[in-house]
Image 1 (cartoon, one colour):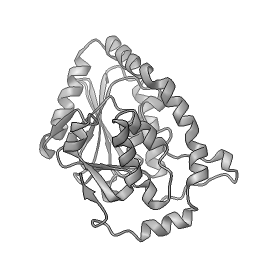
Image 2 (cartoon, one colour; image 1 turned 135 degrees about the horizontal axis):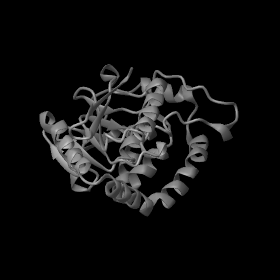
Image 3 (tube, helix red, strand yellow; image 1 turned 90 degrees about the horizontal axis):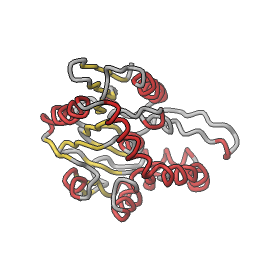
Image 4 (cartoon, helix red, strand yellow; image 1 turned 90 degrees about the vertical axis):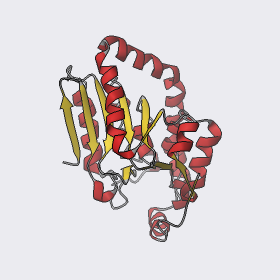
Length: 258
């Protein structure tokens, strides 16, 4: 298992932890499938009324798709499969509130998850960035999700600057991507406190409010996401060229913090 799910019946909160710490909680195909299954299962667990989503360890919340994973693709560019498109709670029709507790790096495919959380509690040492353009890939789904959570200029800068910059937790808080900052050792406690508050309110009112909030942006979101497959098919470099660019990076030296 590459996920841990812990349920506290007293508080009504479940903690879902991405548990691939040695891979910076990157997502392989098995983890992606597990995530979707967990969200679907939580729909039927009435004792769970709110969820905290986090990553194992302190280095990373999630670093997107595991670069070591081979994703089988059909021959037609009109049928490209995105292995992360269904990993979020809303994609699986879960309307219980989800609080993301970001404990380290959050990049690339992590934004599929952050994009479908109600709000983000962040470690003061967390960083946020989108490496796609640096490696010859179109940031489509990720950019769309972040454009709905951040001022447009900030979302554009993060999506376009690739690995050259990382958004600090403080800056993420200042622009509204993050709703609360916590010291690393206090992060989970802060997220659990917020989730327990939500779980303590009448559940129909909470879930109805979640639906209302998402209805305010879902039409635009769905129209934008519908364009993503074509943009990716047109703009991505061939996989081997992407791999070469990724292999040629110099970890720890290619970015500045802002």
